[in-house]
Image 1: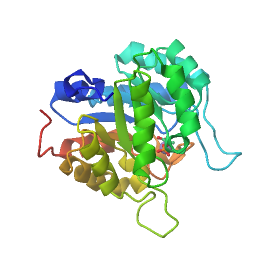
Image 2: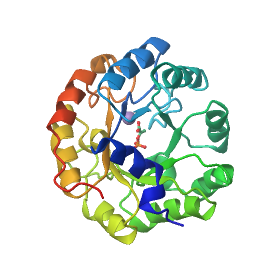
Image 3: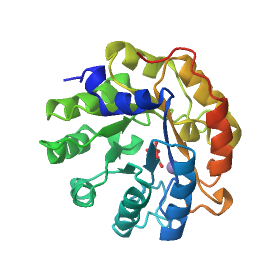
Length: 265
Ligand code: PEP
Ligand code: MN
């Protein structure tokens, strides 16, 4: 069941600050130093949730696939040292087991997992009886029912703190975007589930730094609840998604420029 707004973890976090919910951090956790350095700077920017992938779903084998379990300890350190809630991607029940054991605050299901109802159902079963908040990215293909279905599978096992993340959709056509936004899809999902927090991921939609601000502002104008932005102390040297990550300083400028024209109640 869809939770009430006043009970939802994500709505409450955003509301406390009377600003859009800000989730930021590197695409991938790469080293303890990189994770701690980024988190220290994001804490100063009053980011709400620190994100970092430790198990990375890469298109091609032979590329960096994440640091795995080792990264859990770094996220725990961020939590402990800066009091920042931490989030990571889970794609297998075993990831959930590790994440829960390490007190990861928030989990997310990636676009390549949301496409697969078997996989989502397995994750939902692993989450049954837990209270951990979960963010569900849209599937890579533009299929509203598949996205809604993944969210419903979580509600059905009693996970009520759910949010949706709009990260755009794959397309083979040339485009200025890495993943085309097709805004009508998240807007329809919002209409279907008015209490579901909706977060935009302009990093994966745009694929380049200069699109992050306009995509974020567009989402806020469509009454989205927050942003998730990939942030790295040295984007050019990032081991994944180097072209789209921005420094904490650039993130700070973007967050300061964003305007909420309609505040959540
Ligand atoms: C990510 O957030 O780094 C990621 C892999 O995203 P997506 O599932 O949207 O491709
Ligand atoms: Mn990424």
